[in-house]
Structures are given as C-alpha cells and as structure tokens.
Length: 478
Image 1: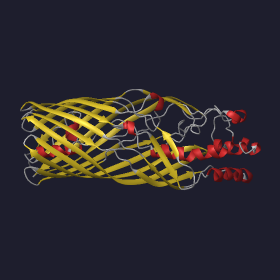
Image 2 (image 1 turned 45 degrees about the horizontal axis):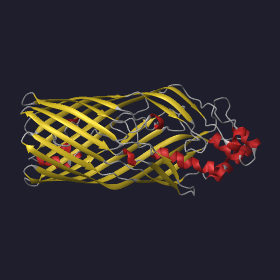
Image 3 (image 1 turned 60 degrees about the vertical axis):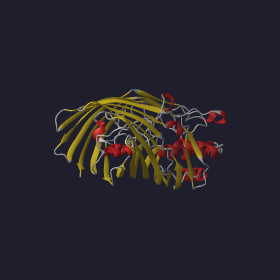
Image 4 (image 1 turned 30 degrees about the vertical axis):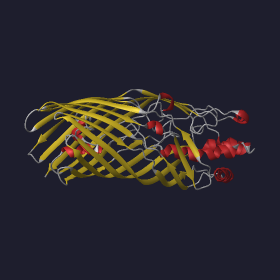
C-alpha cells in the first residue's frame, strides 16, 4: 500500500505541472486570441471572413486573397490579467481503511493566508505577418504567433501550494500561409505550422505526509510520528519543478465566399495537436538535521523513487472551427459577426512517464467544448481615421467542480474599441483596447483517498478576475 501511494505522487505532481499550459488568459482554457490588433478593435467580429489587414491570416489564411498589394504587419498585445483569491482554506485529505487509525495528518489544516493577491502575470504577445502577392490569384504569407500560453505565480505560503506555484508556458507558431483565388467569389487558404512549446512549472510537495505514510505503513511509527504536522506548520515542505520542451507540426484550413460585393462569409478550421513534451523533474527536499530521521526519510524517497529524472508527457491542444460574416452596410460602415467553437472536450487526460521506473500516472480532465460569439462594427470616419468597437461572449472550459489554481477558467464578456490612422496609402497604425469581465468563480477541490489529488489536499477559494488588453501594430503595403 505504501508503494502504491508513494508512486502516485510524482506523476500526479508532474501532470499538473505540465497541465500548467493553462491560465487566466484571454480565451477559453489557455488559448490566446490576441493575434491581430486591428481586428481586436471590434472583438474579432468577422475576422474569419474579412480582415482589416493581413493579420487575419492567423484566423483564416484564405483572407489573404482580399489584399492586392504585398504587406507587412508588426504588432504586439500587452495582456494584463488579474486573478485574486479570497476565502482560501485548505486541509489534508482524510485517510481511509487501515490508515484511518494512524491519522495525525488526516483532515489537518494546511497553513496559508486566507487571501492571495493577483497571481496572474502580465505578458506581451508579439505577432509578425508578411504577405507577398505572387500574382492576382496566389498570395504567400509568413506569420509568427503565440497561440497558447500563460504566466502565473503564487506565493510560497499559498494554501493551495501543493496544487500550484509557478506556471510559465510559451508556445510559438511559425507558419507558412497560402491563399488561392480559384473563382471570383471563392478563395481557399492553408497554413502549415511549426509549433514550439516551452514550459517551466512547479508546486510544493508535502514531504512530511509522504514520509509519515511511507514509515507508518511499514510499521516504523516511532520515526513516522516525527513527521506529523505541528499545529498548521509544514516544516517538511519541498518543491517539484518540471521543465520541458516540444516541437511538432500543425495546420489550418480556410475558405471565403463573397456572394455580393459587400458581403463576405468565411469558415476556417485549426486542427488539434498533441505536443510530446520532454524534459526533467527536479525535487527540492526539506533539510532534516537528525541523522537517523534523515536516513528514514531518504529510505522513503528511494522506495517511492521520488527522484530527479527525465520525464515526458502528451498534452492535447484543441481544434477550433470558426465562422465569420462581414457586411459592408455602406462604403464607410461595416458590421461583423464571429462564432468559434473550440474542442476542449478532447482534453480528456494528462499522462506522464518517468524514466525513474514509476508507472504511468493519468489525471482525468472534465473539460467541455466552448463557444465564442462576437458582434462588432467599423466606421471609416475620415480618409485617415477608422474607428471600431465590438462585444463578445467567451465560455469557460472548466466547471466549478473541476477548476484548479492552474486553471481558474470562467465565462468572459469582452468590450473592445480601437482605431486605425493612415499616414499614407502605404503606412498605417492600428491600436485597440479591450476590457474583459470574468465571471466570479470558485475552487472546491476534494481529495478522497486514492485520487490523484490525495497528497495535494482539499482546497476552497473564491476567485475575482478581470483582464485588460492594449494592442498596437504598424502595417506597410508595397
């Protein structure tokens, strides 16, 4: 029994660490929608059908067919999320079975403040686009984007530290995009993508409880009792850190249809991908000065194989299907509509393998598919100025029963505004601002005996979140 419990720890920890490819970021789950400052101004409404510049190729490569001249766009979005917690309380899981009679740990409080300040870190997301008009029907594009990612960081005394401390994930897509106008009303697009993933993720480890379990279940109660909690203190806390990288191909397909000169429809599909993340797990162990006690502790660590080692894991990144409608109501006024479905239900599990000899561990996820809806408008006020505004709703992928500190996802409402200024026919500046209201949510995690969260404990909290995004880009046509 002790071996089974101990061996379940490191995989479960690392699975959550790799799953740290999630955060309080700008679309459902850990998807990043902020890839076009020009289209952000109207909340990306209609971007799958028609772009204000070539950055729309990120959403639908077929939209490049609408631009006659070659073009370069360089931009970035500065994302400032806020995720504050209140009403924090945490406790160790209650033991069951034979261990119930040896339960100085079962149900004891995990110390930590009752509130936590903003744990979501600001980030700048660059995006670069270039398009060459090979002829009137064929356009070739190059783009660099960060489609998934996060940065969150909790204090070391966070009551939920066994669930999460730091989560820092970056993805970079370098894509070759092609559009072909095969009919005056129809255009087809395809993107071939090289995706790179880099992660550094950590959480605390309750080595006191691990040592107690390992010693108590082998009958060494005299040593085991030295690791019981003193009040709510946790003198035997340690830390696990996973670092890993991956690279893999991905793709997008798109189509646009223009039945009328002032009306365009677009559909696009981004395929799912499964990065094979390879890296290492590193453990920081508590210092135990008493030699006999340290020897007993080291025996538990060796028996459980809780050691630094290479790891690998596979994480599913979802597919996205989108529909856009762009309607030029007048030569100067445009209305756009966007609907996008992200297939988060494919995110069924996280599985990790350790070279140290531990058996695979699987964390089951209960994510569901999400919908994004946007409605926006654009008005060309003068020859130089164009202004935009839009609203959107974005469903969260995680329900209340499965939300974790790494994934404080919830429903969102977007309010966007933006403008473009044309210095000349060739040179323009685009800027946008978005405020996102995130629905107040809760964390209510329970850790029954035998569950992957057993050694992380129970956790309850209320989350108050919001997001501000400022974006800027410069485009040049030639």
